[in-house]
Image (tube, rainbow, N blue to C red; front, top):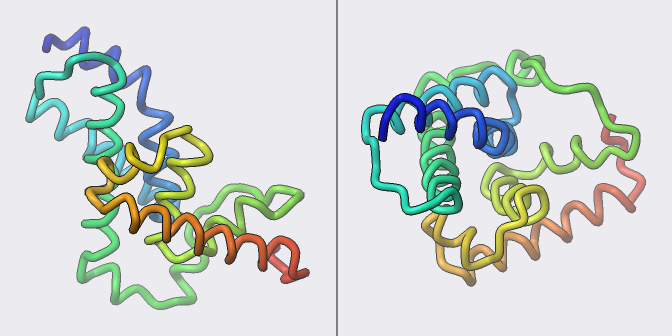
Length: 158
């Protein structure tokens, strides 16, 4: 894999990697860190990628792992809740969907993002996240219920 191919992959898949990282972390700064680490790992590993779909799946799997590592970092647990709530976030959407998705626990955000925003099947999500298909289906089902409650229940999300 030459530098031109690496650049092409970065240009093509950086938005998808960023969106997944943001869905997992809920922070622009953390998503940027995860995206950078993902592409650094691509440069270091230089894996044999069969095609663009394989490359995208590889990058999303690495991004999900990097985001998980970031969320488990000891320094992250020490961050006061008031400060964590003030991290950079995008402007609220009028219908509250983004806020509702970001308010989900991290374990539910990634499957929702991969299924609804990236268009992956349950089997593909299971492979990317290295979870069983049943776990992915359960998380999607629970996330839908939580989102339904937040969006229809009149809960103030903004």
